[in-house]
Length: 547
Image 1 (tube, rainbow, N blue to C red):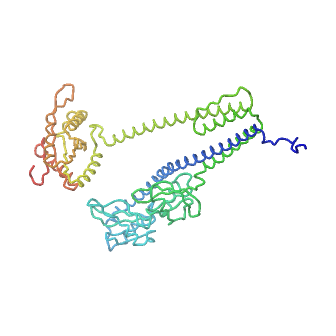
Image 2 (cartoon, rainbow, N blue to C red; image 1 turned 90 degrees about the vertical axis):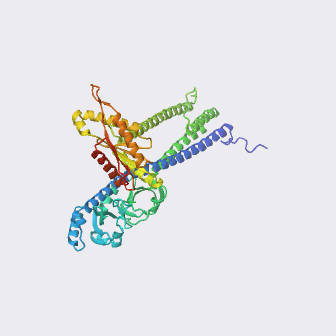
Image 3 (cartoon, rainbow, N blue to C red; image 1 turned 135 degrees about the horizontal axis):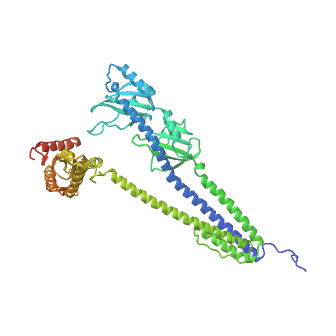
């Protein structure tokens, strides 16, 4: 019998070459899918990291605008608190107080209501929107006192959310507090301009994350709790909004008030670049698969090896290796053309990579230059330009730190105020240029005399100040004598005649007794005593009269 299958066409998949080509096709399909998945995941991760870096930075910039608005409102409220009618308030005359408050409120750019709380934390008067605020809220807004110094001037936030209070003081007496309710329209207008461009909702949150004012899609959501944005580590949060949409949100603090600026952006808008990459990747992969499918079913076995070579090159490109260079076949067919195109793409990628590396290097160099410039500016801001000593501002900051430190370790702290004797007459006689040379030379002598643990600064004009750590009054007196003697023995050459000139200084010494203001007054008082005693001497402000 004859074979029933004899004479039938061979199935198209039975040939070895077809099987190999089909295998190459499937391998290419798998490789393309893996590369696409890696590309999409990598793009998603990179975008997520970029958003996590850029979003808080944009919020911080916008928060500075809101912070400036709130600071301006606070300054206006402080200015109102200094109004004579308010500072001279009387318990039996509320009409002038209310009339004055009404005029201030009418001219206010930031507040829709004002209230006055007396020093017994009792509400005396409320007008405008402040009348709708519960009296216990206004009374709790009373500013607190900090330590033994002046009354605290920081704004205070009550649980009501939109209340800012500042103290009403005259001299050192606290008479009460002036309370203002922020105008929502002003804050809402600022919020509309704040936040990242892609955000569709911006909020002003209180310290517990409740919405005080909303703008954009967030308008009308007052009282909504967004506590997740202000708790924990700073950064983006992924959550559902009140409408059930998936959103990304972040918040930036607004300073002492405890408030935050928050913004929300829809998830699909934030990750729109990823969706574009997915679409483009799918389109590119589909085109590549169609091309390779056509080639797989149309070329002969001799095309298998070039295709494998191209596939291997594509895998190396996906791994970030741009040193691929596939030898071009000598024949002129589709494989040869594809090889040339592939090599051209690799060369372009290689050039782009070089450009990216060069740009990154340039950015690093510019960042380094900027950091160096910032360091120079920072140093200049705390240095006196003539004498190269620390300036008055730096001395005050350092004194604050030293006072806190000696309070912890219970060490003595002393101060020397050094003043050049008869400097004005010398300046008038020799000129300001000579005076500047005297100051520079004197600063050099002081720097050579001061100890490593002491701080030397130019306090102003011809006065210098030395802060002596771990030094009692007797030690400060001895150090003052050392300074005075060194200056008295020094000679200054100021003109071409080479005539040596001499200076003397008067020195006042004092020891810190726990009160910063008394500390300065004691040293200054000792300096004036030194001037009265004939100058060129050291006088210590000793309560016991021993020095």
